[in-house]
Image (cartoon, rainbow, N blue to C red):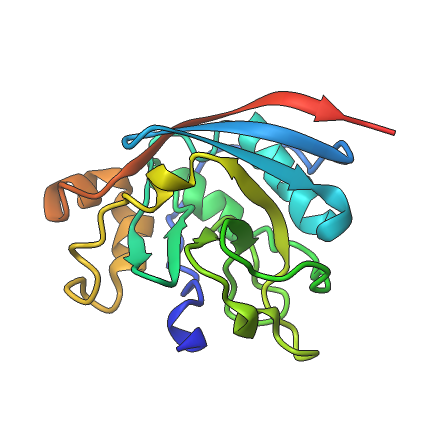
Length: 206
């Protein structure tokens, strides 16, 4: 079951935009307003849980990476996953920039947000929100998926994300999104939900 979660890191796009700005050290914690096609979700990112992952997330949000990204995988009573950019060139650029590994310091409980991966050294941009408590994703000392934060408001909207295509998508759908971007999703799976925008709305520092 866990294997079904991993983000199959998609094929690259030739060329692509200029190299993105390097990760900045994130604040100790910060809130992100996530506007979606279902409503607003508020997430609290906590650097102490996964410093490398939170630093990357902070940089991605500041660079508007997730704006208009499709929520392309929703498995009821498991996870909702997103994080392939609407612009395929942007996906290709960040695919090359793996996040250093973090240990699991907080459990994948309902509402926790973690980077998807295909094993050590493969986290890049794809995130999932736990729809239920998923302690098996903590890894039990064998790696796992370190949460970077949690949804503090709006889980009712996460629960409403469209799951009708789960099990009906081709096995390499992530490759297709990576190559063609959101244009592919809107053509092939028109009722999927989207992240319209992410904005940092509050920061806390020591």
